[in-house]
Structures are given as C-alpha cells and as structure tokens.
Length: 283
Length: 149
Image 1 (cartoon, rainbow over the protein chains, first blue to last red):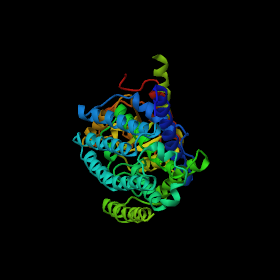
Image 2 (cartoon, chains in turn purple, yellow):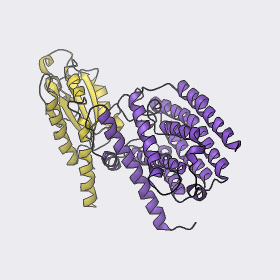
Image 3 (tube, chains in turn cyan, green):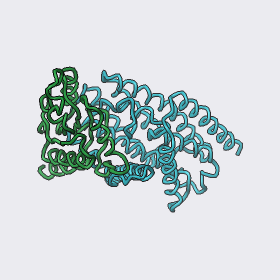
Image 4 (cartoon, rainbow over the protein chains, first blue to last red):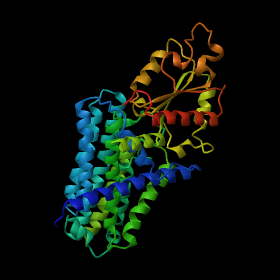
C-alpha cells in the first residue's frame, strides 16, 4: 500500500482526536458516576498544552530521551496500525514505547518513581502475553498478520473469537491503568505512590508521556474494530462499548495488588485465550 | 509567537493542578479545602486536580502556621514546583500565624518563608472563599505567574 505525508499527518491527527476524546469523555463519565459535573470535554488537551508551556525540570538526559522515545514509538505504532501495516510489527513497536517509559522512570533517583516503574513492568508482564495471543488468534482465523487482510475480512471475528475479545478488553483495562489495574500510576487523587511511574516526569516531559498514552489508548481501542467487518456502525460500537465497560469497572472497583493482577491475567486471561485458540484450531 | 504564548496562558488558567500542604493547621482549613472536591462544590469543573506531587503542581495551597521544623519542607516543596507557579495561603494561621502568632515555636504566616500571591482569610474560610482564592491565583498564573518565563 502506498501512502504519502498526508496519510501520515491525517493518521496522527486521527489518533490524537480519538485518544483525547476518549480521555475527556472518561473524566466526564467518571464525574457523572460520582454525581459531579466534571471538567470540559477538552480538559486533557488544556492539561497537555499547559504542561508543554511549563518550565522543564529535567532530572537527567536519559529521562528526556526516554520520554521522547516513548512518544515516538507510541505514535509510530498507531501510524503502522492506521496505515495497515503488520500486526506483529505494531505489537513490537508499542512494546518498545512501553519499555522506554519504565526506563525513564528508573533513570531518576526517586523511590516513588522506582516502585511505579516496577509496577508498570508487572502490568506489561500481565498484558503483553494476552495481546500477542489475541494477534495469534487473528492469524489462525484469517491466515495473515497483515492489517489490510484483517480490515477487509468479510466475516465477524467476534463470533469466532469471543473469549479473545474479552481477553483484549482485559488488556485494555491494564493498558489504560484503570482500576483494579491502576497499580503503576493513577489519574485520580488516591495515590500512595505520589504519581507512580510518572512521578519524576514533569512539565513538557510529562506532556510527552501523556500524548504517548493518548496514542496507546487509541491503538488499543482501534484493535477492537478488527472484530467486526465492514465500514458500518458495528465496527465502531465495539470499541465504544468496551471503553464504557472499562470506565464502569474503574469506578466500581478498588485497586488490586500485583499478585492478583498477574494471577488473573495469566490464569483467567491466558486460560480463556488458549481455549479460544484451540477452538479456532479445531476449525 | 505572541499568539502562542497567549494561547498557553489561557490553557494555564483552565488547567490548574493543586498541591495542598498542611503546614501545621488544626485541620479545619484542610477539611474545607478537601470539601471543594466533593460533589457539592466539584472544582474539577474548572479543570482543578488535587495532586500529591509538587513536580506536577501549578498552585500551592497552604494552611496553618509555619514553625522552624516545617519551614524547610515548605520551602523545599515550593522550590520543586516548576514555573510558572502561584501560592494561595488559606486561613488566619496561614496568613499571619493567627492566634498562635506570638507562640515561641511559631515563625508566622506562610509569607515569612515563601512569596504568597493570594490570601484567603477565615477560621476556617468557607469552601466558596477558597475557590475564589484559587480563581484569583489562576489570574496570576494566566498573567505569567511566579518564576517568570
């Protein structure tokens, strides 16, 4: 597939739009569930612009490098997805972005930052195997990792991969750092780790990691569109429904500990995924 | 360039992140500050987020008298906040030391240690007054805030 600068810019703008809208709606929905009114829809954009305009207190060069790399790889993973590259390539590029966020947090001396980084590693340990198993399921069903093939697949993957759909929803919750999986950092005030993995990122660097997170969430939501064929409403209802489910669970549960998270992700998540893979393999 | 700077200043006033530090207050003011976050007052309407991290904060909300032990902590927290920033002193004790101003262990109000932009009087002030003080602090932020650019 050939594409030009216009595709790239359009893809990036689309990712920002989806991600920031999801973040803004998240805060409004959460506020309504707590019988508050909540911030304006574009609040996450205001926050990021403000952070970009603040004084840069950079702990060391590694931290700055890691924040930039996190953003670059997150944006690249999203671009590879919308420009219909290869699903495996998308997986590895997004994993690099996630790792660099952790490395940047470990580059500072703050113990809060370190504990947050270790917990973020545990979160990655929980969701990355789930993600790759979902992709393997898609390969077994369609015979290709190419996103062109997957987007054009005529039958709903949802009916063949219902368990893997649930597993991907599980991974979305961990990736979005929503309760009960908000171990490494949390958007709400109840945070014993100050700000977890994000503690020592401040000002413009924090803005870069926030934008990277926006791309990551957009990519995760985008993966759900693969489960339904055609260009109709159904394709976009799936990510919206799963997103609403994750926000609902976020407001209804408290934070788990990492043992519970890892145990559930590997026990229940991997179990469901393998059952579904065997089912697809049986034909 | 000027337009961009004005745009960022506007965003600053729309997204104030608060750090709340209790210097040695009786908790009266602190309860009123936390009451601002409840559904009745809901300061998140204005994009205000209550944080525990000075590295992310724009506004420092302080209550209580300063004493020789916690003045270092207060100065440290203020120094960790990236510019532009503003300080709001809440309650009679934070303003001047209040009824404790002559006590042997009291240094005085917040402004003995760090520069204060907005003073919110009261013992304790009502949440409405605190929100009003924060809004005044925002105007200072939108005008460039402390620490310069």
